[in-house]
Image (cartoon, rainbow, N blue to C red; front, side, top):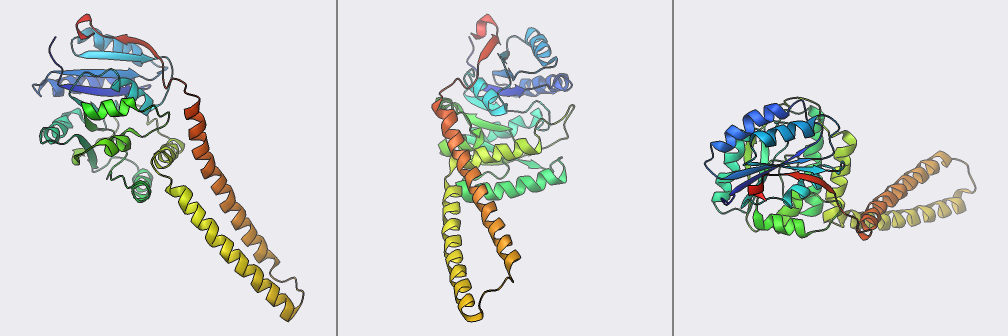
Length: 314
């Protein structure tokens, strides 16, 4: 059996409208690289015809195609982790199925890997996203870098390349919630970034809602840093000192002026502000406790229903 040099991992969730376009561009782009490769599709519990289309593609190119069928929807990152456990290549590239990152750009990542880098991130040139997504992404990038010290210019681009040693390290981690690019960055000894093209989604709709993006960034920040808890502790200390000074001020004012009803609404406003900060802190603490709760249950991260592969690839 020929050794596989390149593995391309693609999670798929309800992408039937754009899969054929992906097939038509992906395989010719990989054939031009003159490297032995495999494409590992992971069906993440799709409810449309995506599994059937993946099976048809497997039957057309069984020599280079493998399909991992999960028994439910576990999320993009868990689907990729399932793919990582199946890859055989020396270099692993992750790619979205929506064609926003053109397969024709894969050679740029391979060139960087050939120069000795063990992890290659990407920066989307001329992003074809809505304004609010670009602004929100930029703000979250800055906040995440300050909290975690993980440098990723464009954390939302899934097109990335990894050395197989990095993939083995990632697969050995048993975290329930994680952010794969950030985890890879912590393991990499010589990371770099390259600029790649970005296109509009070929078909279908984005699976990332505003809530999903917020959820992802919570996982990223709480999974790699305790800085939010430290910041909240410092904020609590500062507010305690200010509250004590304010109480002393009110006591002195009462001695000098006497009892009065003015300023009642100001006190209400201050109280509501402190209550809001307190509730935020409880929610933040809940994020960390929730991660611990999910981890100690030690449940399987995903269940594989079936794997479509030729006998030669087993």
